[in-house]
Image (cartoon, rainbow over the protein chains, first blue to last red):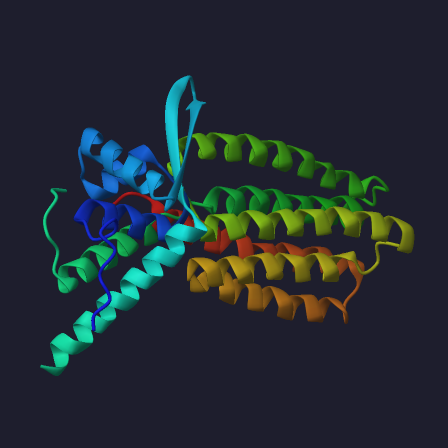
Length: 98
Length: 192
C-alpha cells in the first residue's frame, strides 16, 4: 500500500519553495522569487499556504526602509519534507522494479 | 512556475534543481582574507624592519593596525548583509568559526601579555591555519586547505627559529594561507 503524497508539498511551486528553504538557513522573498521564476502574486499565495500548514515561518520587517519578507523552514516542515521524499522513493522503487 | 500535477520523477527533478540553485548561495568571503592577509603581512614585515633593522623598541605598535582591519571588517559585514538575500548554513558556520578565531586571537593577546611574547607567532600561525582549513573545507576550496597545511608546517618550523626569523615566517604563512587563496577566491566569485 502506497503512502499518500502530502498534498501541501505535492505542488510544483510549493515543493520548489520547500526544497530551497531546506537547503538554506533563511531566504528572502525576492531570493525565492528569483530562483523559482514565479510571479510575486502566485508565490505569496503558496508561501501563505505553507505557513498555514506550519511548514515555514515568515518574518516581515523593514530593510533599508522597504518591507522585507524572510522565510525559513520549521521542524514540522523538515519532517514533512523528509516523509515526502521517503514516499517518493517508494513510488520510484516500484516504478523501477516493473 | 505554473501549477501542474507532478509525477514522482518530476517531483524529484524539482527538488534536485532547487537544491542545486541553493548551493550557489554562499557569500563571497575573499574581502576578509585579502584585508586581514595584507594588513597582517604588512604588520609582520614592518615589525621586522623596526625591530631588526632600525632597532626600535616600539616595534609591537605595528599591530594596532588590527583595529583598522576590525573596523573595515564590521563595515563590510553590515554592507554585505544588506545585499545578501539568503543565508546558507555554510555562511552561518563561517560566521561562528571566524568569531571564535577572533576571540581566540584576543585571548591569546591577554595570555602572551602575561606569559611573554616569545612564542606568540607559533600560536597565531596555528590559528591562521585553523580558520583557513575549516573555511576551505566548508567552501570546498582547496587553495585554502593547502595554504593552511603550509601554515601549520611553518608554525612547526617557528619552534626551531628565533623571534626575529618568526616574523618573516609569519609573513610567508599569511601570504600562502590568506593572500594567495584570497585572490583566487575573489577571481572565483568575480562575474565572468
